[in-house]
Image 1 (cartoon, one colour):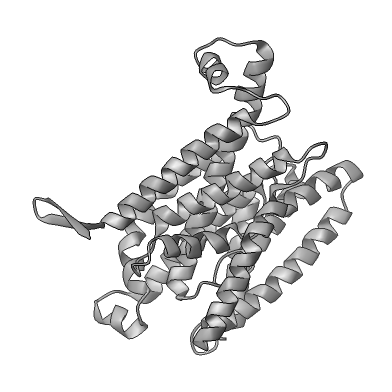
Image 2 (spheres, rainbow, N blue to C red):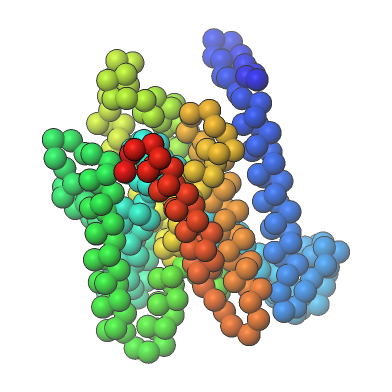
Length: 338
């Protein structure tokens, strides 16, 4: 069922299933976030959290909730949403579920750029991640170009670039001191350990800054899912639009990598999961953002639940995303697309 909202000369069609799915996802996110806040070696009840947020509670409770758990969970939600948006935009533009930034090497480029920035300046992680992702995107595009940009040629080139960049990252870590190398090796897997309110400000400020571009690109992305000749026939300039989508997707991926590390499979899995929930052929950006946030939060909560050791969240996102990859490969094989 489709609902139509009219405001003077403007009209917007809204799918009832999309609204119900978005409401369900947001409800699950809220409940999962509350559950994650209560779990840990020092458990907190909902009544305790309410008391702390109103200025009460002990100093230890305030430190655990306000200085540790809330920044970590809010960073997980923001980074996961950024990964989900980036993956869904690339997959829709390329009309291929395998064309996500973590598969085609953009996340690896962002992580390498962040590592170089850390070594040279001791900071400036976000600019380094953006520069690394942009350079990787340019190199992969040039290498994959052959009278156009065939999706599978781009994917295979991106996979090769990702392997090379991963090796470069390992080489850079080998040049660091032991403690820094151990911390950066965990970050390269993807971790949300020891996040602070500055990370929350960075990721959510970046999402708010990029929100107008994402909203503006929603309409052309709906048409870019069709064949090129149909899209051109509708009067849309494909090359500028693809550059805009690519630039926005890279900024989102770099933003997420700079705050949570290159979490594997989040950007890849969020889009297909969202399309299973809303199978209407349109870009499901909001559902993909919510799916990415939920995957990241669940992975980080599972990492915190392991006793005695601090496992990176990337271990658990890989466990979630790997079955999705196998499922998509089997689906593509049945369609004869592989």
